[in-house]
Length: 300
Image (cartoon, rainbow, N blue to C red; front, side, top):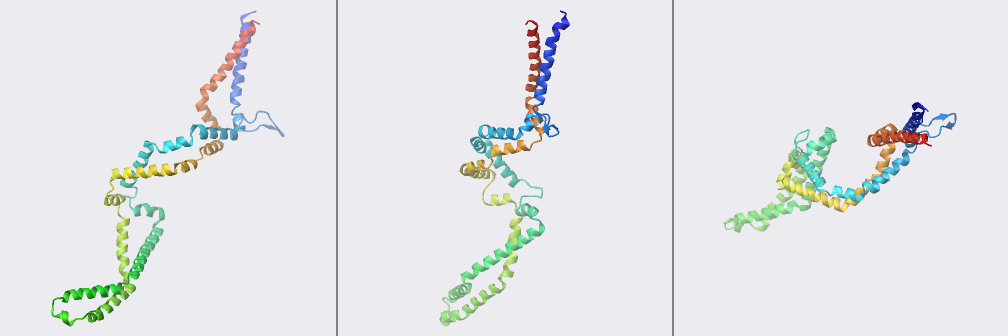
């Protein structure tokens, strides 16, 4: 028996083992679609992963949601110092750093999102509402009697200790103070809107153009205090509502949906990026096993 005869068995076994495992690995993903001959579907088509992708997506989603990224893991992540610091940093950056339209003001934040026309209409409506509210509250105060009473009190104080004190009685004071009070009340009712609206417009303009940072400074809330306040509010929200918020994530469902929506080629690329070395080892192992079986067969 020559050397070629001796080595033929192990070499053929190695080749068969290599290509058998190579085909088996490829059949995980290929073919991508069923192969039909008439109405008959060729067995093992499509590949295992394309055919079982919904079940794979459900299994991976369940594994991630129940074991890898649980509700406790998410709560711990949200309550971490890093997350709290990130929230505080973003809030301070938003307030103290200028945006694309300049300083962070009510106008610069709201107007681009509403549009010029809608913002102008909304601003006008706000001013009218404030003006109407002020006039409504003034109407409840009954300004006329107050003006009459206070006017009479001032007159009495002015004439007290003078010779006019004996000449001017309370009835006389009321006789001219009461009409003045009534006149002022009617004047406010008739002209109050036109008097108040320009002043309200000026105040609203100052407020909408004032940077948010200045509002905080006016409230003695400097950046460090703001960070502490934001952190405190964030912890209270997460502690009180964290469980409910985390439940809304539905991690398992999200993972399942994402995998189910992935193209099979993308899924193949993802799997190979993680397991390519291991899959190649399986193919090479097939060649090794075939070679060993061929060698053993020589001695049987």
